[in-house]
Image (tube, rainbow, N blue to C red; front, side, top):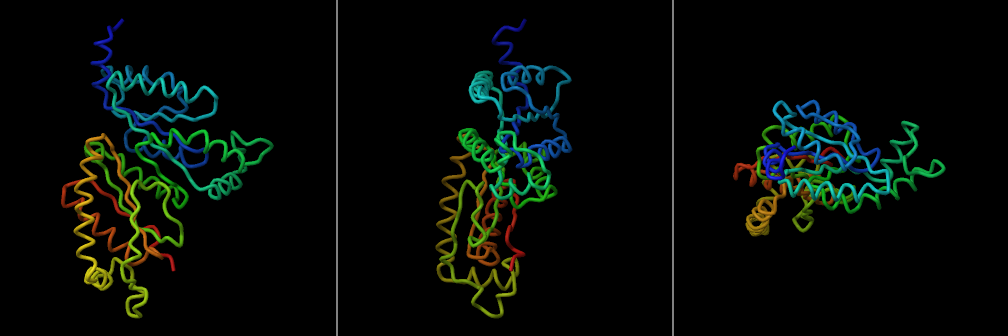
Length: 298
C-alpha cells in the first residue's frame, strides 16, 4: 500500500482530469464523444467518490494520457460526494478542469420533444419542471466550472469544433485558452461568457447605405469603425484593461477565458472589435479561437 507522500507524488504525475457535466440534454454525450475522438480516455457516469481512485489509476505506467469523466447529477448525495472528491484531488495536487454544458430552456424542451425522451427529473413528463429543478441543483457547480459552453445555437458539428479548439494538445499546453466571439444583442447575449463587452456606443455602419449589406469582416466596414475618433482611445483603454485582467486570470489558475463582444445585430461593430481583440491575444502568442455568432443573420 502506498504511503500518503507516495500517493501525492503519483497523483501529481497525472496530466489531470476533465470533468464533463452540465444540464441533461445540453450535449454531455456529444462532448464525451468529441474528447474521445481527440485522444481522451472517457469514463461515463462515474460516481464522484471514485474520482481520486481514478487519478491513482491514471498515474500508473501505461495509464490513460488524458482522462475525461462524465458526471451526471441525479441523487441527493451527489454534491456532497463531489465536493469531497474535488477537495481530495486538490490535496493530492491533481490538476482538474470542469467543463459545464448548458442550453436555454426552450432549446432543451425542443430537444426532448424531438427525441421523445423523458427528463430524468421531470415529474409526470413535465420537461420544463425537470429543467428548472436541474438548473437550480447544478447552479453551484456551474460557478465552479473552468469552461461553460451554451450549446443552444450549436449543431453537433459546431460543438465538436468548439471542444477541439479548447482541448486540443496545443490548447492543453497553453496557460490560458481564449475564445472571442461577436453577437447581436437583439438575438440575446451569450450566457457562457466570462466578459461581455457592449460596443453599441460606436457609430453604426448599418446606417451607411454602402456598408449596410457588408459584414464586419470586410475591409471597408473595418476601416469605417476603426477610423471613428472615439475608436483609438477605446482600443487603447481596452488593451490596458486586458493587460491587467489576463495576467490575473492566469495567476488564479483560470484555464479558459470566453470574451463576447456585442452590438445591435452582431454583423458590423462587434465583428470588427472581436477581430481586433483576437489579434491582441495572438500578438501575445496566446491560443485564441474566434466565432461570429450572428454574422449571417439579416
